[in-house]
Length: 57
Image (cartoon, rainbow, N blue to C red; front, side, top):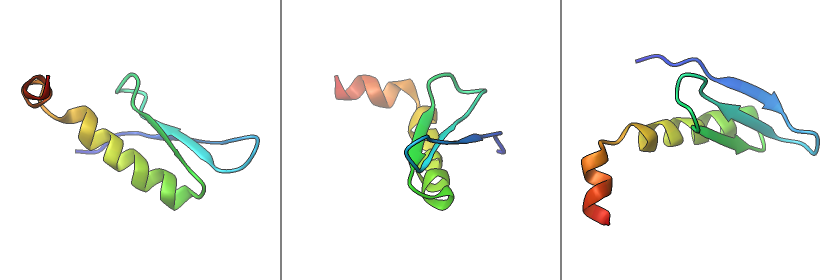
């Protein structure tokens, strides 16, 4: 699956990255590579089935 991500430079350095089609799916990193790596992880967590999360409660 391919998702569009948006990278925005932060005023104090680094990048914020988010996925417009996944509300609340946001991350950041000091470099573009780190930001993209972090958003991949955030997307994976975002997409986990709700059932798995309910088991933890």
